[in-house]
Image 1 (cartoon, rainbow, N blue to C red):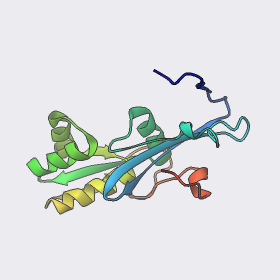
Image 2: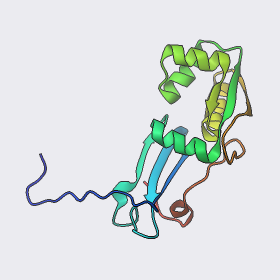
Image 3: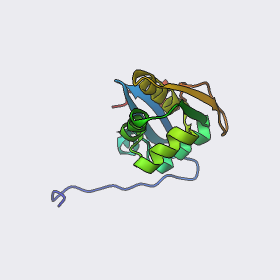
Length: 158
């Protein structure tokens, strides 16, 4: 139950607001972040820090879709998949066993940052992995990520 005397202000983005989403590897873990920004209505700017969302592992579908739209995907293939390779997919992306088995056998359409991180983890587990160019707009090299303007301006993100 909310504290009495406190008001909750809920704002929604205007038609000019821009949603930014990105991934990075932080401390050996996959991290995702997303925020809104607008020069017209100032939604997403201070003091609206609540419009910043972040987490670890696989990004929520709507955040991952924005990352894929900006960066595209690469197809991550594992040579000679085995149990430890399945564990990497399950631990990193929260996949079910059937999903991890499909990813290890048929390839996984990873964001460039996911591919870089998964490849490193697979190599640590003794597996060879390679990437093939995937699809999507604005495909960057494996491991690169497009940060939003606020991150590039030096705003500290938790």
